[in-house]
Length: 121
Figure (cartoon, rainbow, N blue to C red):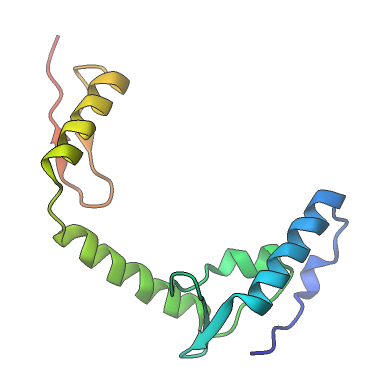
């Protein structure tokens, strides 16, 4: 797939940003494949975020945003189906106790489930 330069990316860029842009362009050229008019990473078959193209100074393919949304939705469906292991739940409880006050209610932002109900003082 031929990528077109984004005309808005002509602003002054610092040397490290130029290096980052060159790295991204190389990755987009060498480490991707096309499906349904969008580019995906070869390493994990994930649809590349639109921001990655912008960081590289490219216009994203027309289908990129729509395919990315589909990819995220499919991931979320699978994520919500997963049952955490006892070890993962124990680690989560430890992290919550270490980082939040007892009166704080903790909600998993991906599932919307209350992980811990806050206790009154």
